Image: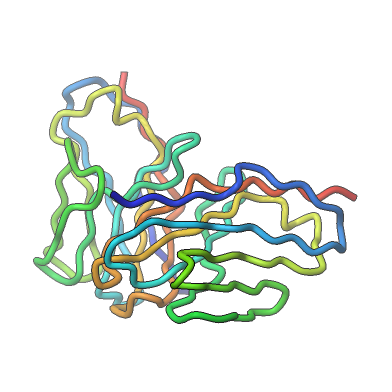
Length: 113
Length: 110
């Protein structure tokens, strides 16, 4: 079954404690992306990756890092989380073409206290 | 900057047709996508328009006019399960960057 898997689904952490949210896809997609979703704001793109070792900033990259060492994995790293990063996070993947269907993970609800 | 506008809320009755509009201001426009999201769920892809015109997928159709910076999603034969949030999303900068609208909450009444 084609899928994007995020872990964990829920996470409560404290300010400043580094964390990683993992994302893995089994469709051999070149393109992967991270979004955060906040009430009334829709989804905002954090980072994206066009292929292995190729990443670039989206609209709201501050406070986040990513890496793409393997095609299937695209982890999101928060080096020093702050309360304003409390949000619902989604990872997505699609094949290279811009208009192809994007598949989203189940989401990670992060709370930073 | 980039911006999208879509209505915040739409209500319609079961069996009816509803249209959700999306206007955008984007440099480097590449295409327009539509997504559905049920409460507590992940966005799911509905449709994509890269060129002007109508794309039809079952009960859903999507339209794009690049000259008017405007698109819409048309939902026909509404069902209760169509109650969800609908997002338009503009792809730009070669299709690698995406900006989403704030979403339209659709309520389908019996």
